[in-house]
Length: 125
Image 1 (cartoon, helix red, strand yellow):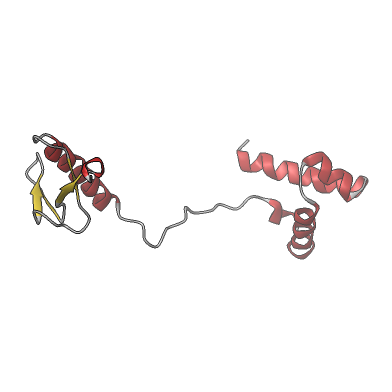
Image 2 (cartoon, helix red, strand yellow):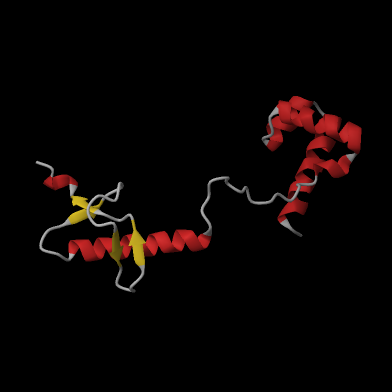
């Protein structure tokens, strides 16, 4: 028995108990808000009990989400750049604007454009 079948069974039991006792008592027993019950009841009256079965939902796709390949490249480039920059005589952080050097090479030899070097926040005095 799957998780969806269990949920469907609980919802059927909710409607059965609401028919035998009161809606308030049934909702309190099953931990369902009355407005949710009445929304389900309107759908059941319109489409039948099968509407209580949980629907399969797809994962939401964020409109500005980076692809996995681009994200991996950014993470690899950022961590390797920080290691290379910190290994010098003085710790420094890559800047946002790309001031300093226009590109930096990581340990793997790939160029990381726009990863300029600026001073670390603790060195700003």
